[in-house]
Image 1: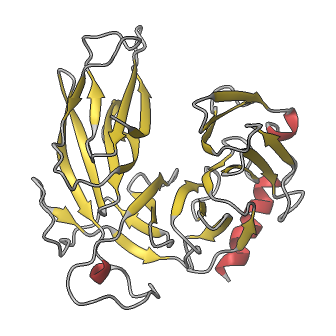
Image 2: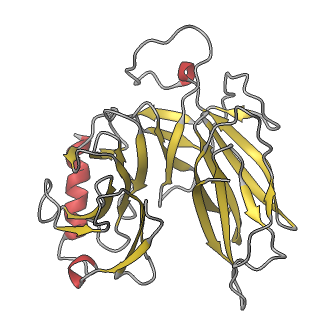
Length: 324
């Protein structure tokens, strides 16, 4: 069984229990049995039975359950356009509680895409990121290359015949100008409610404002795919990107809006770097995983961990420019 994505949470209280939720190439969302130690072969409980045509799960994320700070939900996105919300029901099981579906005919009119034949056309979801300021607001990356602003509070029924055990709603509220290919990663700014980044197969990172469709800026970082992009949790103008050429690039927009401040060579044979994450607790650490099956943890200098003077104000000015 090949995993496509992994999501992690930590238990609370005196005993900390790391829990991993993988998505699979067959479209299943699974959790390991709580009765078996994590270091053994996991006894997986598959809670969304697949069919021979089930699409891959693109990403899973943990979300705090509303009103319960120590309980979590799991949200999964897939290339059939489904966005599914799962609730833990004990004994190592998840239950599907809410569902959303992306259908071309229901996308906001700001979408400027090629015309499709009449009838239902699903929009594949490839990446997701939630706003740090509104727990209902999230950005979806798509196979078509355009980011979508979406909401968990959406009430409109999705016009789709896709099978589902719960009613499916249409979450999209706004469509942004597209990349030149599918999007592999999106990341919302932890310092500004309107800014987010996206990266994809065209080798570009786009910086968007949620208030208008065109990006503020577009940076070509690689001639190959970009697989991940992440905002720094402590520096408002710093982000990192992982490329198909085996490197991790660190950008400081206060120094340059076009060139990376630091380029880290993760793999010597230029095999791709698929994922990366800043550590929000130990802010000097950045982890990156590559095609060789290796996760490397890099220690960042204080240049990337200490906020500079007027950095937050500079970010506000950047957001104000894009909104004009």
